Length: 318
Image (cartoon, rainbow, N blue to C red):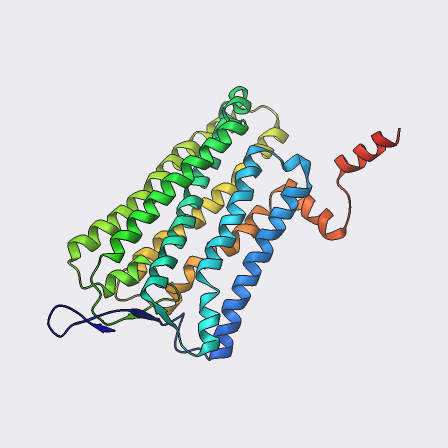
């Protein structure tokens, strides 16, 4: 800390991250973080590989799924790897600028993830409720526009919150009760008025709830449209294509709201801190339950060619 301009108070120049818990030995804690990171990256890379090698998965739905896999890798890369590095160094001191930077990139990626889930829900609504308009409304140009809008909104939101947090007064203590810098634990350390903290928290909540409302509106029309499908096989397929994205949405918002509500209270326990990394870890497992993705993953792991590739080679031969 450095001497501040007001009285004998000192300005915080670095934060100390507590990690998950103080009750677990260092090697065990290091193994937990490393395993969580490797499992998440491996799972999402597998999803990316399946979408890349299978032409049948080159559709708008899997376009957003591919982006979500990249975002999950980004989110956990921003939050988890610094902690094992700190554990190896036997200290988890983070400069103020690094903490604010981590906050910005985490919120940027999480916000883009949130808005991509909204775009995917809109795509499922069009595919099932308005099939004739699907190819027009989800063509390449529209996908690019949706990606641009999602990124612009997310960048603006993340930058706004980061700049606002950087203006808060931190005079001590400087111990962050988490394994990365996020809004709730930083609010607890802020010496600024609770009014500003409340405004920032409400703003972050609003930016998360708004996409959730749009997602809910999209998916609420799906069951009625599916039940109107006469073919049992087509009805089953429609439900299966919506099941995985809807589960991902529930886990994303469930873990997000739980983390923010619990970590924002003084009674937050050690087990509440790890909830946030469940979403990127579980998403590959959920996405792989999709029959198309599951079949492609099996072929990739077994080294088999896809039926489309075999047909193409057979055609070229003749």
